[in-house]
Image (cartoon, rainbow, N blue to C red; front, top):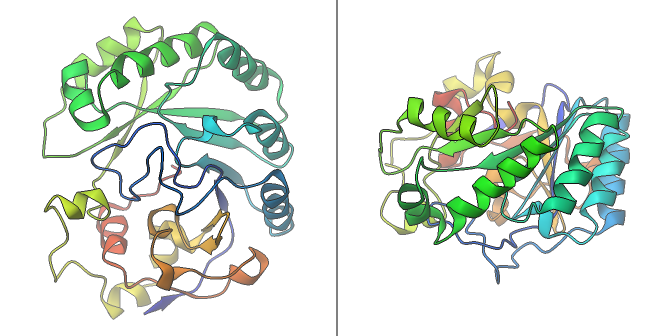
Length: 281
């Protein structure tokens, strides 16, 4: 089954590929400190993708990884993106020290387009968060959130819904308010049961797939994020950030060549469809 794009609305740049400073047990693309299935993108690769996307009229750019703030040229890449359109950066927040928080704050206030920092936090306490993300991650992420707030950057917090835990939403708001986020914003992420999720016995059932009728519906290109976006890595272009470790779903070497119809018969497509989920909104 194949889906035609409606248009290119959002560009994802996997700026650090699958290289991350932590190895979360629910990571759907199995990132980690030594995982180089996709390596760092060069400044030239990022700029080429931005130039192509700009000519297609895109409206938003997102940096992801891995951990984007591992990239040695991250501020240069952010500046290049912010000359083209609104930018979001997905991060675990652990590398946001005082200097980086100040640099982000300066861009947040003065860049020609909006800058959003999205920090992942999967619990209200170190015990809850760190059993998923690793020892010490909660405290480091909270410190990053606090530094951003001190520099006038109201980060959005992303929470992955794993292990069917009931997140205490009121308590989470209290935690974030205590870090200086006056009006906390939270994005809830459904579980994509591939990568490490699948390996720990939480994969998809055989029936959890899109049907031809689902794909043929006129609203499907707007219900699936791949209907209006593409993801570029150091190794080429994919329909979305979720499938970059699926070689059969690779589209092309360049963004220009990757805007045609694409496959939507992966089991993870089912989660996007039934949840009406987009990584970017």
